[in-house]
Image (cartoon, rainbow, N blue to C red; front, side):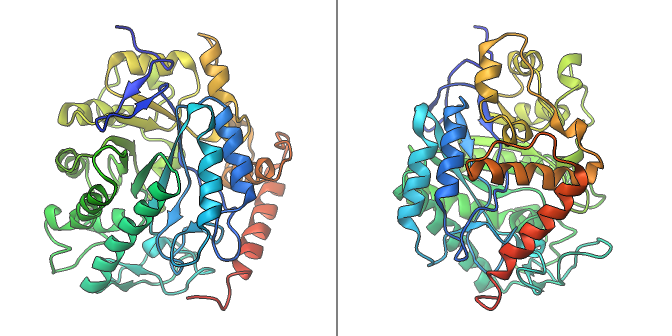
Length: 408
């Protein structure tokens, strides 16, 4: 049977996704000063749900208000906001759309403006010049146990407030990814050393969430195919962790790579394995790793990064190495990009990143357009890179200032 982006897929837990397009998780920065969801989330996610994707994955919903990826993150940490979460979930599930809450902890990648003293597996700072991140302190074993309970609690709240599933963020150098990496994790207790120990935080979080939400509720994990750092979390490590995650009954695995020190998720990584389709090879960042991961597991696989044309998406699905196509940046501007792709065999989403100069302005450019849509405005497709940088920094400082003195 031919598989393309319009084909439904049933996850191992029994939940059916209406098509093979997923909105990839992207930071929104829309929370209020108590890090609760707002009407802006409702407005944005209704637009995205109406846009046609089978799954929407939220940006980082954090488990601890002290350690954020960004000042405007939603957090579930004794800060109320349950009715706001219900409104968020209601909007994001219109049009028979599944809405997965991405759950994370920023670890040592907590910006200084949020907390100058973040936490990590070990007291190892980021290797970045003029770092925006403070020197971390190592979590105690008891604090690691607390982190696991926080992940379980947030997943339970996600289910209670109407989200269709959850995704555990285990990639991109955030806390779980830090535990997986032998560069960041140099502990000598049960949370460090062997890969089995380094993966313990992730696995116990997954197992605890499964026990809390039941066997019919979707659990996804976002995992690096590799950190792309010598001595870091390797592709061989990834393959073993994937096998463990299948044992732990994960329903969907999103493959990515890199971290802030080596941001492959931003610039793309082709991998070492040969990609069979030249159409796919021109677009998809992590397809070079998908085949070996497919050989290691039967968990449905989602790859995000680079896909723009329906031809490449359909070819990748037909080859059978992946099951769901993740799309990110095009939806920061064209919220109906999935509907457009589904409507025509030769359709292509616009690669706005190619027009942004300088390229370092891309993060701010896309984030600001998300905010515009959330505010009920049209996206600004002609925004200059210089404007994007300046306005993004101003927005982040303003959002962070509302948090000052509240909690560190």
